[in-house]
Length: 178
Image 1 (cartoon, rainbow, N blue to C red):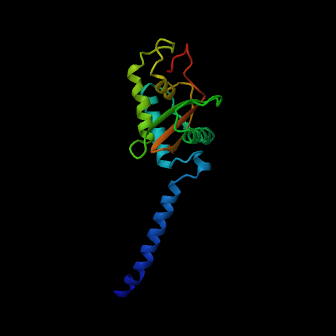
Image 2: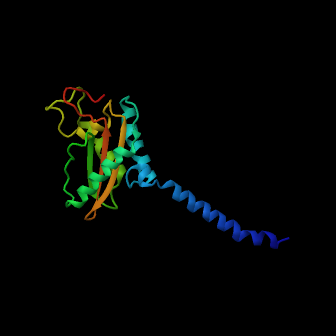
Image 3: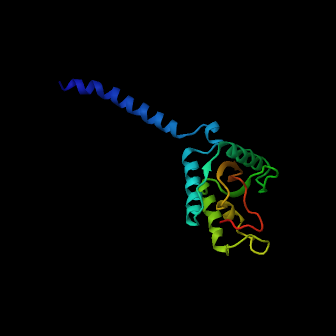
């Protein structure tokens, strides 16, 4: 009788390894599913951080959009290919936040937290030329009409670039974010 469990042990171990690798593979979304090269955990982190900031001010949560993320990935790749120069895209129709930091030290959560830290400079009320300096990333995160989020990551010269796009766009003068 003692030999029977021993013969099963290699088969059991192989089955567990196969299950573990299949599970790990299943957690990585295909670029078509997420719209960008972000891992599922990164998508979840970005949604969690954005929706936490939105819940703090009573605004409805965002939902992930693969088409919006595809646009963000195209722009992140363009920025990486153009000497890492940070500049906003034009004509996409989306709201947009950009972040750059040292690769391996900063990631997508750091980008979202950096944008949210701008809240301390926001004095409330409608956006206008006199109160919008240094708060636009935060106000776009929590813009009340925005419903969909899509983000991407690219690398350039040892730096990570994070681009998040928002649909519909926010940050309109004369309107309050929430």
